[in-house]
Image 1: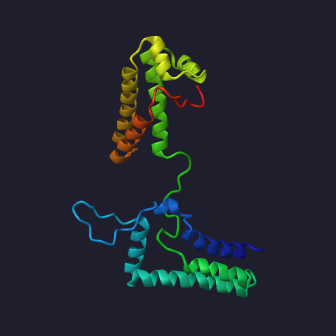
Image 2: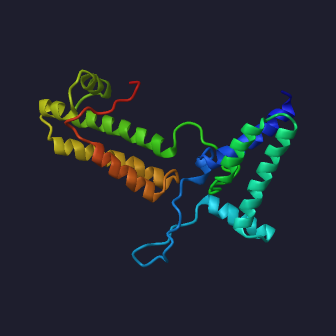
Image 3: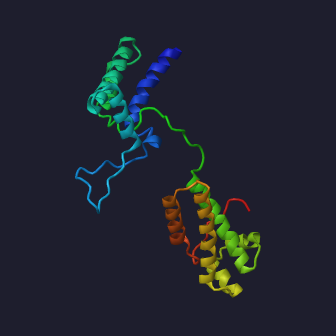
Length: 222
């Protein structure tokens, strides 16, 4: 199979994958706008990036969004027809692909125009940093080194048990840990790495998850 054949087949597969959520990283899984007009108690759902893309492209071409999407499907199926003529696809394969093209929701952006992120998201990175700071704060509050505290936690003790041994009020320990984490999260908002809404959600999650009577998630390395 030559290079151009591979590109043609890959193009069709990419179009089909579009409808199956392959490019969900740029569609952001937005929920559709409610059919009823928004009220004061029901704010309007902002358009998804996919909605913005199709509306903008339709406007530039002076066609309706429905006609634009129909043309997109027709063009995709024209590629399939040509691949059958060239002997690159069987008719059975083509029929299956065409069925999927007919069902494409076309709610996302058909090409990955936004940067594809590799590695953890900012939320994940900041959450990990916040947990590490919580552990360091716990060690300081308990009068221990971080490595000694982690050693006891790995031995199966909980923060509540260690606090009892050290004569430290567990409520005071928990408050100090959350305060440290919240400070780190607030810094991320100031630096533009998190939105305020993301920060509030992360704070709420840490507060909900921090149970001193249960094992504390430890970093992989000391």
